[in-house]
Length: 179
Ligand SMILES: Cc1cc2nc3c(=O)[nH]c(=O)nc-3n(C[C@H](O)[C@H](O)[C@H](O)COP(=O)(O)O)c2cc1C
Image (cartoon, rainbow, N blue to C red; front, side, top):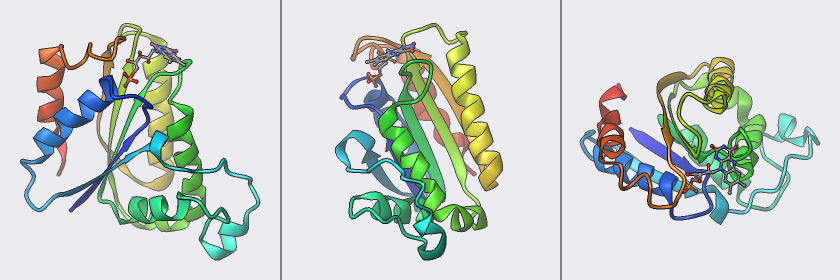
């Protein structure tokens, strides 16, 4: 089984800490290989809606898009981890998700389990987390993927989440939800 972790944060902060805890827990899953992509460290040009990918199955840009899409297609489990930026996911992560367009028929053919981790300054009751969860529900419904978990945490300073033992314990246990 292959897991792909997509980190939407540009800094070594709360999302990074969440993924570190997740990887610790995922070590309990037998035969799981993990690939992690930091969206801020790759070069993905914005989608041009040129539609060339609809015939070729490849994005026209000579950037990291096609390699990332190969990893997305090949993954059994995809974890989207993102800070909240302006009530939504980060632009870095959205650039990658937009490129799912280039492989949408392929992505619909393969069942995937999805995990979502969202970290924002606001308390977890805030509407922003509902908006983001809904977005991933729509994406997963469209592609026929199953959401294994969608967890939200309130943290602001870069070290806040790693100092929240309850949150870190909960994230370490999420591997239990992968079938
Ligand atoms: C550009 C920007 C926009 C933000 N917008 C929001 C927001 O709309 N809601 C919120 O709760 N936090 C917002 N935040 C705070 C971050 O979500 C929060 O600090 C988060 O823990 C950062 O995660 P990271 O440490 O993984 O980068 C924003 C931060 C930045 C830099």
